[in-house]
Image 1: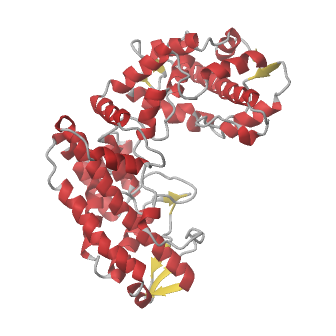
Image 2 (image 1 turned 180 degrees about the horizontal axis):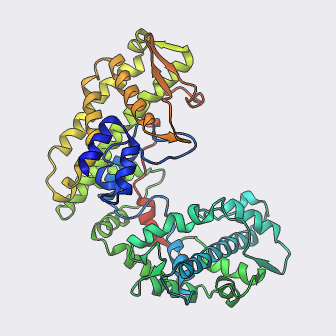
Image 3 (image 1 turned 45 degrees about the vertical axis):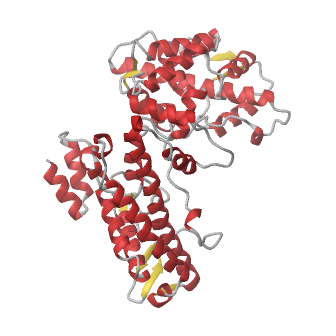
Length: 464
């Protein structure tokens, strides 16, 4: 089966890839080793050079099985509480639907409770003053909180997100909950007895969940006192340090089950953020003082830091190319060849790429070496960038060709996406799909924002 996928990659056929998936022989991780995105994702194009998959691979080396998006640990406790309140643990479709409906009701009530609590603690009732950072669908919950001000009883039946089941807690947190051993099976929505069930019960008990909320979640009632819901929101919100002792202990136990996560978290706790420091700065500082006990983590963090430097140069060149095209209309090669900023960037490309390639060619630990074929396409791109670094026009061609390949591998409404900038006989030109003009001229690679490596999520498990 793998040979089919390898062939599909060479001809860039996502139809063949999907056919192999449907045969059930392999999984996505078995073969999507390049940056081509198999998902039919709508909307604006992101990751224009196809770096996200490789950054995710590197993130797994320091903080596996968690994500940047599922960043609020109390969501896991809330999900477990919703399932703990359901007595029906059968595996039939009706039982599973009952559990899902209960979770969705609890999520809506919880989001409303948090925003009601925020509204009460603000001197100004403007929605812009809420402190509900991290609540999925917060704008919907805020609108509902303002709508029910002054009412004695409120319900759960309001819109939270356009598609709550896929974009809310179930869609974002359930798969991570399974990897944290809180769920036996996220498709069946069943809790583990050693972690998931105790965590849900701790959340219910330590937040003193009102009986009326339990009744609504269980489907026995439709209304709850606004006063009771607001008071519960003060106890159950997402602010640091608000979790009960048992909830906190169980969340940390789930996080620490993986020893890589546990050791990385120890390094993070030893080196908290300094004022004004970015995650990239923090990781750069951490890598300088890692002992031999964490040699595998040091190799991973050094890989991340050097990888991000290469990424910043690659994306900067694309941004500069787009900006120049916007200034000149059609950008001739001789203009690129004399652009001092691109020439300076090209000189730095060889330095940062050589540093990254030298590092990954001399890895000592099995942990870091395992699976490196998953970033093979990025390694090849970096080699092309290095080889073209002394020729500004050729370097721009390398970046544009990579961008075009990545874009063609994405789909919007069933059609391949167009590159933002195209190669022409005369040089380069913007496509109609290009983003709007930059607010400022790209002049420094440091203006490129690095990828996020889940450290905020890891911090959250110890600040909950």
